[in-house]
Each structure stands twice: as C-alpha cells, then as structure tokens.
Image 1 (cartoon, rainbow, N blue to C red):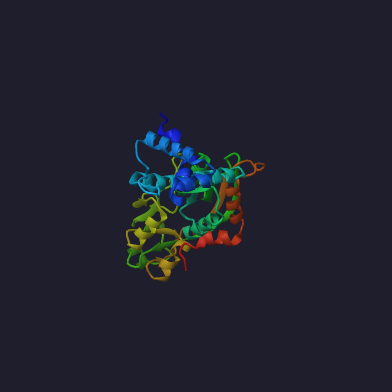
Image 2: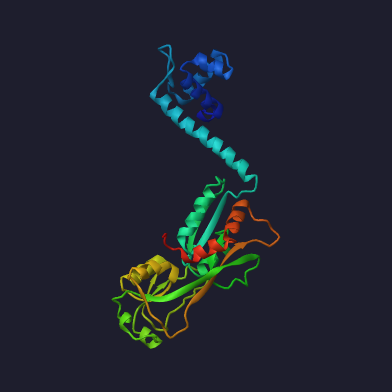
Amino acid sequence: MPSSRDVLTPDSLAMLQAIAETGSFAAAARSLGLVPSALTYRVRQIEDALDVLLFDRSSRHAQATEAGQTLLHEGARLLQEIDAVAHRVKRVATGWEPQLTLVIDGAVARTPIFELVEAFYALNPPTSLKLKDGILNGTLEVLTSGQADLAIGVAVNTSNVSELQTRELGEVDFVFAMAPHHPLAQCDEPLSDEVLLQHRMIAVADSGVRSKTSYGLVSGQDVLTVDSMHAKVEAQVRGIGAGFLPRGMVQTYLDAGLLITRQVQRASRNLRLHYAWQGASHRTPGRALQWWLAQLESPTTRKALMENHHRQ
C-alpha cells in the first residue's frame, strides 16, 4: 500500500482542490484531462493511505468530509509554499542572498534603520533580513566572526582586519547629561574629574568578547553598567547616574527638560563611526548587500543614522 508521502504529491493535492472547486469527480476529471475512473482511483489511493474518507459520495455533489476539509486547507497552504519556494530559488539564482545579517551599534539611530528595512522589503526580495545589536568592539566582532554581513556603526580600529571594506558613516556628538534633579546639575561648570568621581556614572557594556572598551569614565568611579543605549538613557532620566550620551539620541529629552547637559573639564567626546563589510575589493557583493551599501552612500541617509533617533 502506498504511504502518505507517496500519495500526497503536489499533483494529487491540486486534484483534490479541483474536486472541491467543481463539486464533482466527473467535472474535476474533465478540467484535469483525466478519465473519471482514473481520478476516482487516485482519490481512493489517498484515502487508503491516510485511512480516512475525504469526500462523501452519497449525493450527486462531492462533499468534503471534515477530514477532507482539513486536507484541502493544509494542501492549499502547502501548494502556496511550494510556489513561494520555487519563486525564491529562482530569485536567489539571480544573485540575491538567502539571508543578510546586519549588526548595528547602539549609537546608530534605529528609526532610519527601520525605514531602510521597509524600503528593502518593498522590493519583494527573496532575501530574509536579520538584525543584531552591538556595542563598540562587539559590533565589529559580530562581523569579523562571520555572524553578520554588514556592520553599521563601527567605532573601533579596523586596520588590523584583513579583507574588511570600510566607509565613513559620520560623527556622533556626545553630551554629558543628567536629570535636572541630579546633584551634578547644581555643581559649577565645568565639572572636574574630582567632582565626577563623587557621583555614579551610567555606562553601556561593550558587547565584545575578545576585547572591551569604555569611554568617559574616571578611574575608581562608581558605575552602573547596562546593556543598551536605551537603558542608559532611562537610567539617566531617572537620576540614577550621569554620563555621556549621543546628542541626537537625547535631543527630545533635552527639549522636554527631562535631561540637561553640563560642561566637563575633560575633552568633549566625538565618536567617528564607519560601516564595514567582509570581502576583497575585487569581489562583487550579493544583490541585497549591494542595495544596503548603495543606500549608505547617500549623505542624507548617513546623517539620519547619526541624528534621527526619534521620529519628529
């Protein structure tokens, strides 16, 4: 006896759909170019393999049983998936990657990233996207370890990484910020390291495994470490601590009076970010990566990634 895998083929599922749509075995046979006896035999093979009755034959019309309705529903879904796979394979053969993974540093604005994601999906590409978060060295590590195809917001030196292509993304302007009720808000400017040492700072942990980098901290200082820039902003809005934040990320908080800035004696923080991807210069990237690289060539896009952390 044939097994369920032998009988549940795309052709047999399409045949069952034809019976349900036409309402009779004879009409379905005509539409498929089969003799009625051949169609009836194939239906019985399926029923025998599944040990169920798919159609009630007691009336003039072929009425699907409950089991038959379930198979018709699932069969329609499977046929759609087969068509989608065939379409996807055909598109991939034209140079589209099956998957593209992006790692995005915490200092990069997310609103324009998702606007780019929407524009990418509007192309109806066969490439699936995966987004990862990174901080400092961790952003580069995800790329160089092969876990990502494109890194947006690389802030560390990449000169010692072979076959890594990099382009400048822009410069992040950092401000020293705190809640209006934080004790540092009442101190005279510029704030010295001695004054800062007496207060807790909020820091984002470098997501790197092989190496760690930190900025803006005084040795011996009390530090609350969080794992994202958004958590850092919330901690500082609550007055738990103070620290440097990208101006573009917190401008709305500054405008609303939820955060204020103060000058510090130490040098102001500006971080130059890049975007990077693996591959020799003579190697042509896949079409999905080409699309993202083309978007990042736009000065307007790069500026938005540095500044537009909140939709206006």
